[in-house]
Amino acid sequence: KEFLTFWNKGVHSSVDSETLVEEGLMPERLLMITDGKAEVRKEGILIAVLQRGSFAAEMSFISGEAASAHVIAHGQVTFVSWSQVKLHKLKTQDADLFTKLQGILGRDLSRKVRQQSHAIEARFTAG
Image 1 (cartoon, rainbow, N blue to C red):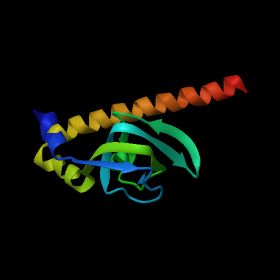
Image 2: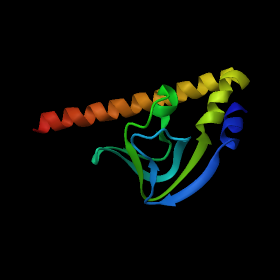
Image 3: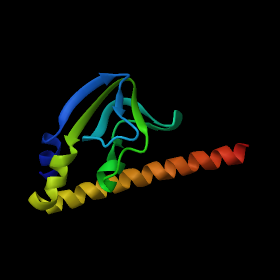
Image 4: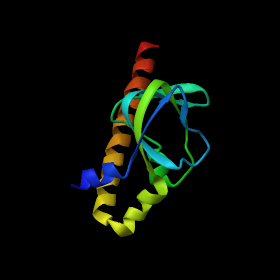
């Protein structure tokens, strides 16, 4: 029931090869990719590829800081997005749901860090 409440607050969108998150700017929305792939680029360098089920702008949501990288749709990408302002209001409106959302985002970030760590390790091992 809580997940449906959260899901129904989202806006479903689709883009083709557009920037979803801009490095250095505070994202207005938290996004979750539902179809397609998006590239995460920092200073033009590809650092990750996001796929179905991955969040974008989650670091900004958690930290309250500007985006640390660009997120660019690689071709057609479908996603659900939620207003960061409205999600932060959950702290007082529905603290349990907000805590669960933070847990989900934390797991997503942890998975991304592990993937990046393995990619870096593979580069050093191969080189």
